Length: 385
Ligand SMILES: *Cc1c(COP(=O)(O)O)cnc(C)c1O
Image 1 (cartoon, protein in one colour):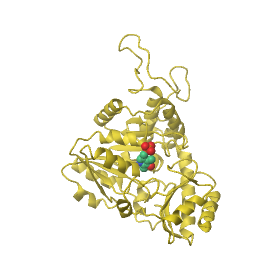
Image 2 (spheres, helix red, strand yellow; image 1 turned 135 degrees about the vertical axis):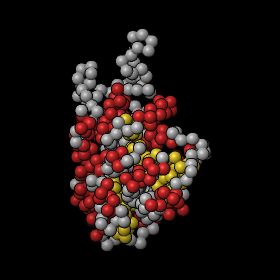
Image 3 (spheres, helix red, strand yellow; image 1 turned 180 degrees about the horizontal axis):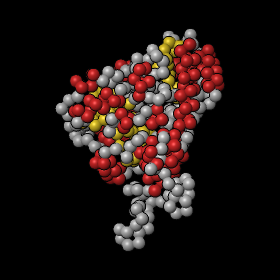
Image 4 (spheres, protein in one colour; image 1 turned 180 degrees about the vertical axis):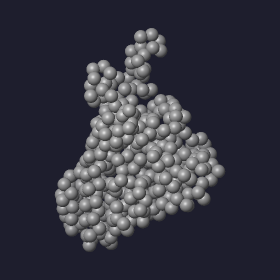
């Protein structure tokens, strides 16, 4: 019944009921490893918290609801969620992935799963027509990040999903940047949605967690098996924090979008700025598809200061006072990062620069402060350096 609510209501009520014991409106934090049984194998739905925990279950139902899927799974981190997806594959299988993606995803693919016999190829997917030709006989999965991190390329999920379906290949979308408030990949034909709930879903920079959402029952069963067998589950306290974050996702995202636009426009008009990467500009190469597939452009922006080298970019981020220089994104507070030395340092320079992540690139996660304070902060930093 709750599934039929509109999106903003689903962030609050999706898959949620008052707790069965006392009617607690917020799911209690069931901080327990195990559950009493009346007779061997007789229990009230939970036996051991790796296999299932009521607080985690509440989060999993919420994730499924906001992503318009049927099954949600909550993990200890975004990378743990990705790790579970990779374990669907066998040695010899191949993954085609976007060439511009989160550094930790690249590391997981190249340094953990490649040595185990799974092959990875990276390519630009902005032109869906390139994908059909790239798919080989061993390709089992397409891994897509959109918008990409940090170059803000946008990939046409519906077009890619059609290609994947016709070739019998799974499509997984990392929806961390957009969140289901802006884009819901399952509605566009993807098979798996992945989240680093550490970012916008949690929203307050106080938890590391991850999630998967799928609609296919067999796929859900296999992923649940892997989740339980490998054990990287989301703990009860962390599940509670993410659930609490999700309840305000829509109001936070609305402000992230407004502030993101204000900051992007300010930077684009600044004489000391060479280039701004933000899909809301009509000049952005993927603006049309971004407008179609997303209901807003979000608060993630990358930019290159004019004539800047490594040191100049570093000096600018060092001068910021309202923006905090830190890894991560998606919290209420604004963060700035220098991908080449931070989030993307694990990608070899040559690979990095091929996708545009140069030494001068600065990435902003625009928070929900007063936009005027953020703009003043950027102005001071650009002028001081
Ligand atoms: C942070 C991030 C991840 C990894 O998630 P963790 O929660 O840090 O493990 C994956 N993809 C994207 C796009 C991210 O920003």
